[in-house]
Amino acid sequence: MVVSITKYTKYLFGFVVTALLASGFLQYAEASDTLQIPAFDVVTGLDDARSLVLRSDGQLMLTEAGTDRLIIYQTDLFEFENKKKELGALFQKNADTDMGKEDNARTGTARDTLMATINQTYVPDLDQPDGLSLVMDTYAAVVSSGSGHVHLLDEDMGYMRSLVVPQWASGDRIFQPSDVTSNEFGELFVLDTRARRVYHFNANGGYLQYFELHDMHQPGRLVYHSESLFITDPGSGKIHVLTDNGRPLATIGTFPSLSRVRIIDGMIWVLSGEVVHLFTMAGEHAGNMRAGPSSQRIMDVTGFDNRVFLLTSGSLYFWTFE
Image 1 (cartoon, helix red, strand yellow):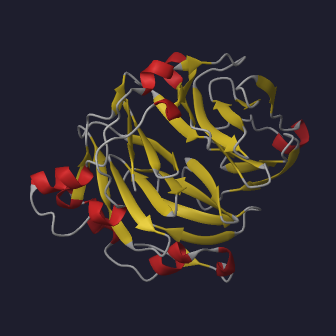
Image 2 (cartoon, rainbow, N blue to C red):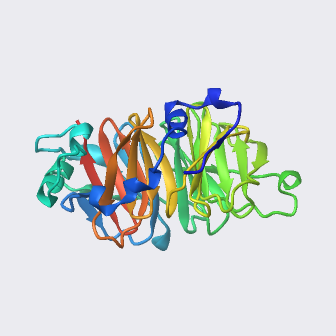
């Protein structure tokens, strides 16, 4: 594990502080410690899905780059049956057998399917949609990586406008967004992987500033949480933590095939290739999960009110925690 940290640790929460004291981080990726998500709560056919978000009203949105679609599901039309297990029980250490691990991973069965409520929405210039973010749990921002735009969509997912970086700010660089996130005030942060920059916009989509990511090999994804930006760097396998104006706070890693970090209902989800590493906000390791066949790379995860949706390179898994 490689960690560097500056004097600005007051911006960090317990996970980062505790992580500095951890050792043997990579042991959590061992297959023997990894539970497999059951395959009976799954939507297939998502060949090039990239990102997903869940609004508190139950509306689930995901981007599918291969077919240039923004897909919307209304998730409150189905109910979970079976007895729910708490997260702690899911990863109890005495589940030594494969059968025990499978039972622990089974947290609920969906009576209906998400496919019954699928919708698609039209967005102009939506070309290879990728990064996706909710803005104040109402409207959405979606990255169109093929056309080099970030589009803002209203509450009904109708097109409003696109973000613009002024020529004087971009200079000789072409704006090529790869991911987007938002803070509690609706301000937007857009990652440009090739330029190794984060562009900052206000809640109305007006340009504010940018900052460079000189210490990163190839920044891939970003998420805002607790006054900090968490940016994954797959090239180094590290998670970089910065203030919202680009001041470095810490680096956490190394994770193999690192792709994303998400914070859901007080749990930290580190997506690393085919495995999810789960941590509490205090930095304690809660367990690992794998979705289906080993060929399925985990792309994103979202959740609300104990309901979890995990997106892989080909499928969408969903279950609930009590």
